[in-house]
Amino acid sequence: MVVIAVITFLSSFASTIISPCVGDIMHEFGSTNGVLASFVSSVYLFGYAFGPLVIAPLSEMYGRAIVYGSCIILFLVFNAACALAHSLGLLIGLRLLAGIAGSCPLTVGAASIADMFPRERCGLAMAAWVLGPLLGPTIAPIIGGYLAPAMGWRWGFWVVVLLTTIPMIFTLAMRESYAYVILKQKTKRLQKETGNESLRSALDTGKTPTDLFIFSIVRPIKMLFMSPIVLLLSIYATTVYGYVYIFFTTLPRVFEARYGFSKGATGLSYLGIGIGMVLGLVFAGAVLDRLLLYLTTQKGGNPLPEYRLPVLIVSAFLVPIGLFWYAWTAEFMEPWILPIIGSEFMGAGTIINFMSISTYLVDAYTTYAASAVAAATVLRSLLGALLPLAGNRMFDTLGVGWGVSVMGFVAVAFVPMPFILYFYGRRIRESKLFRVEF
Picture 1 (cartoon, rainbow, N blue to C red):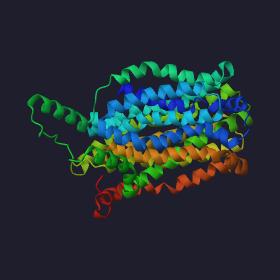
Picture 2 (picture 1 turned 180 degrees about the vertical axis):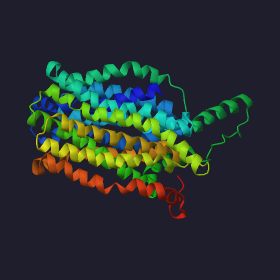
Picture 3 (picture 1 turned 135 degrees about the horizontal axis):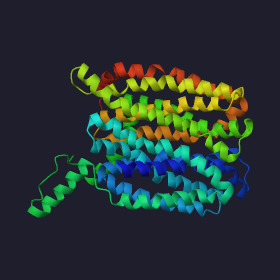
Picture 4 (picture 1 turned 90 degrees about the horizontal axis):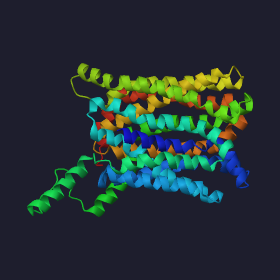
């Protein structure tokens, strides 16, 4: 669990390490294109969008361990190549490949938790795993903000490479956790020992390797568009995830341009959303499993995935509160601590949203948890990559106050979602109309 949490942290860390020094990158390569400048940073998230479509099925065919090991090697190689890139186009291409490799722990992490922990302890284990995507994007801009002026933007990538080296050794030594693959390996061993080639794993589907590969590759997309629950939760998670990256777009605009912070001090403004995420993580980690056990006891002893969703209601209110608070305290240039406090509400709501939805998908689709999480990750990361491209233009037109408020109004529109899914989620999941073989 520690190894998975660490490599998830490294992946998220790499996503924002160069955010404060994009201007230096554009200056070195002689470009003034604002959209391209945003793309240098956000293209990494396109890797998060496309990587899970292949990584999740491969992990369900060949196991978690070999996928983790292969991806962390590629992650290190592509980040080292980014540090040596001699053109902007090459840097963008390598960032995309690094994002694809880096999407592995975010895609497979929740499924690994489902492999190793019983349902009533998944929430606490999820809290340990979520530390990675929580701390990574928050700490990286602070380091990048001070590192770039002192040593140059390329050192951001070298830091990622250096931090990855030792965890890579532990990752390559990880044992397999996926039941299907463990039984498959045991079956092969018994076939060799007994000479009985007719032995089969209890989880053997009977499909040929080619059929299984095609079926597995299609599964995440099939789950996204043919399971209303996966689609609705993916859309909801996607909007909240998009707010975070819009926040990252506005922070330099607000604290550097309006409040006169230095580049390094502007990096410290990311701590607001990070502190909020820590508080949200503590809350969700303490409540998710207890609430599942309580509702299970109160409602007949059957632990339903929907018992994870009352926690999502808290997130539904925290997110718009944080957005509106941040929007108008920043717009009217109130004391700098007030926008930071607003971002804390936003951070807490984001991490509670992430944990509640992830644990729900793991509980609802245990065997294919990797594909279910991959389906949500694809949509979430795609919007997270695209929104920052339009963010600066939106804020140029509307200003910070109304620009962030637009997102706040969207968040308010989503407030009924957790209530609907809590009361009707089981009925939708079990409806014959939506019953599809995955």
